Structure formats: C-alpha cells, structure tokens
Image 1: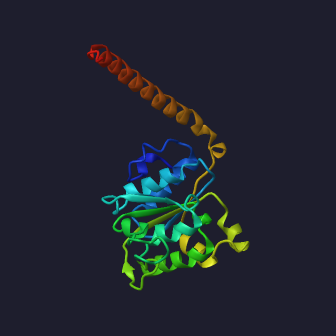
Image 2: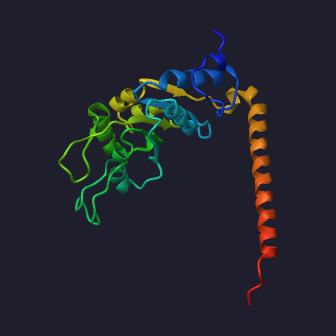
Image 3: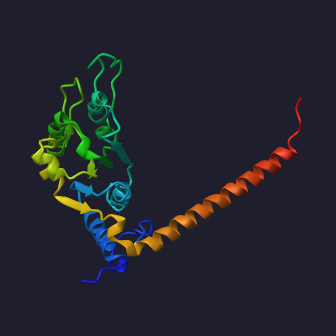
Length: 229
C-alpha cells in the first residue's frame, strides 16, 4: 500500500523525510499517539528517538501537560530510584527533605524513559509494578500513590539480547513491546539525505543571520553608550 503524509492525522512536518521507511514510522506514530499504552521506540543512536517521543506526546490526549524526559544511563545508580520514584524525608542518609519523583511530576502528562535498557535490574521489577498497577511508592514510604502517566521508552540496544543475557527482565520487556516503533538508520533511507541536508543548512543559515543581527545591534548599542571612567 502506498504511504503518504496526506493520509496522516497529525502534523509531523518537523520530522523530515519522505522515504517509505520513514513514512512507515510516521504511520506508527499516528496510530499509537492516541493510545494510553506504553510505546517502545528502538533504534541506533542519532535516529531521532526523542523526536518521535515528542511527536507521540504532542498528538496525544496528554499534550496539555508536559513531557518529562529522563535518561536512565545518565543518572548515578545510587540516585536513580529516588529520581524516578521519589523518597520520603529520612529515607536514607542525606534525605533531609521529601523528594517528589519523576513519575509524580509527570502525572497527567508523559514520562519518557530514554535508554531504558540501562535501568538497573533491581529497579526493573519496581518499574514493572508501576506500569501494571499505575501507582508508586516513594523510597522509604509505605503509602501507594496513584499516578496517571503515559509512559514512552526508548533504547539503542537489542532488548531481546539483553533478556537472553539476563540483564533485562523478560516480563518487563513483554510489557514494553506491546506498541513498538523501530527507527531505521539513515543508511537504510538514503533517499532522505537531500531533504535532511537542506533542512539543517537552512536552519544553520537562519541561526547565523540571527546571530549577525544580534551582534550588529549589540555593536551599535555599545558605540552609543557613554564612557564611564
């Protein structure tokens, strides 16, 4: 079946490309955006996983609220549980105040878990429970707190391979993969290279023109400023 942008309901003009592989991705975004289900976005580094996540959020019923982004690979192992789920005052040494985690912060909106494959294994069961029960418990807390969050997850590793190696829980993977968007590498959609090159060149030109106008105005302003000794 011939794919085209005209058949899509959402506005994806900011996602550049007209190749069949790229239009297939847009079709998946269009289909999945209105769903409450988790979407797993996979692809190599640089394929635009966060761009796709933002498009899914923008076209979703959660778009009136912000999308919170957390990179599971960038947060220290000893901090990531507190960052995602929050903690109560006195939960551990240095926990002098209550901390609201990202699940609560994102309530009503979207939580984007980037590099989900890097989430420590001991936290994967806790994440699975949240996805199943739609409630969290802060570190050091006893109360279950309801959260209404659309969860998107992304990875640049092969999660099936990670499951087989024992690094990633199979039950969590099964939960994540119900809606899956696999992004092709640029080498698999070479026909999009000219459009992408034009897009980035135009963007860079506009940036340089804006920079030159700012520098020109700044220079004129300085020349008119009185000399203070």
